[in-house]
Picture 1 (cartoon, rainbow, N blue to C red):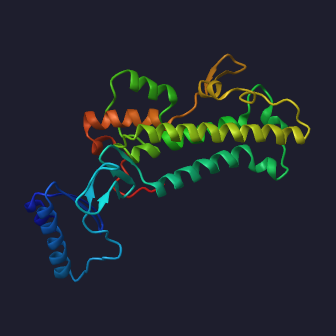
Picture 2: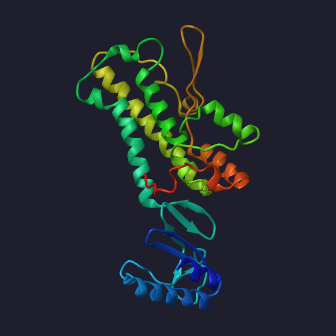
Picture 3: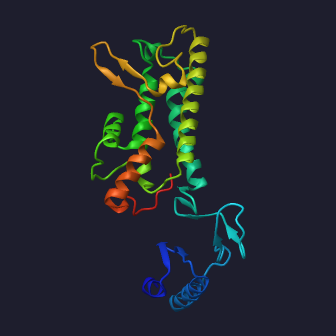
Length: 269
């Protein structure tokens, strides 16, 4: 099937039985559909016309179209339009649920069950916040620290295999979406910290340390000096920052050279 589609000169991508075909030529697309039917018949597999949306014109919002337009098309974890490559809505929902779980399990779950451990908020820093931050950073960045990420952005981007969530989306360039995700994440953590402080207060713990009482802007750039003088980097992780690094590496070395080595297995969360 791949060889026959290549001979037609159309572009295509496949994952198992999920196939996306595109072309500037309507007649070439029609021939590609005929090819799919013929090959499917040879293999004893029929096209699923219930799941398939058929042929559409991909065009910008409000642009005129000769027949049924499509503003974007989803393929695996991506949502592709004429302007941007984004992340599919169902994948975004899974990502947000995962991050919401990390926030809730670290900052609120024990307190809501009445398990109050005052030592977690002694010594100048909320230890459960630190654990949550490291977990979120690892989820988004893989093994990279915040300082490493910023160093790679400021200097030559290295040829390495990246890990973490964004390494499964090396060509996403929807900066508005990524900034919105960053805003959603800091707001979710900020609200959880407010509730955490109230729950500690209800349990008789009057004073709670950093980052409680800080503004969102201060939390984003937080660094905490430990008792030994060591400066702990607690700067807030960012979808947009990590995506910018991976996108630059993909342009330089090719997406397949730098993406997560497990990217050949469909990642949906």
